[in-house]
Image (cartoon, rainbow, N blue to C red; front, side):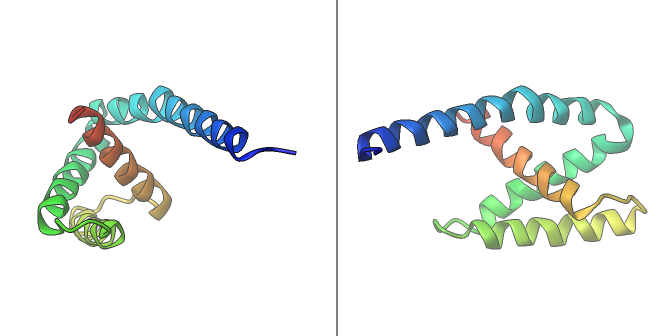
Length: 106
């Protein structure tokens, strides 16, 4: 039977592996997309929107509100510019932008 200490060690290992995989695959993917002219402006707009949401929602625990505002803002921008990105792609790009920003502030 797993003890609480063993469970915590297992959770830490799983989280570490997830962070390593995210860093190894998603962050380079974002950088590659940034180089691609088609997605470069999308990535830049997402980063701008995330930074704006960070300023707008300063209280802790407002992550869902921040993400909703970023999705609304970027979706409007994408529609105006005739750029098609799936909801899943947009969500992943937002998460990656947030992760990248957190890594840059460390």
